[in-house]
Length: 86
Image (tube, rainbow, N blue to C red):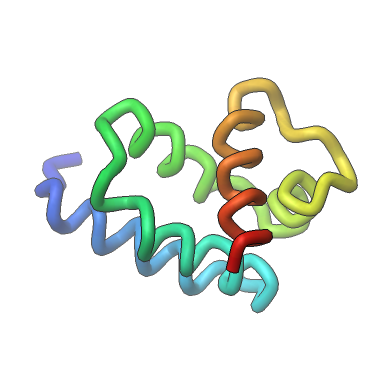
């Protein structure tokens, strides 16, 4: 995909705010607003992959109902901490 860095951030921010469930909109939207612009390339790639996951799984991971896959565990912990601080 030939996507500019600016367009990638806009797409990811939009996907964070328009998830499909209001709960995940309210968790990922503010996280995206606060953190996307300062993420390095590897963190952006991981967050982009996370955005492909379904909301039911994401909510269970963020809320601690189910452990997050190892690949996403650190990111999910950061997102959960961010949500708890809001």
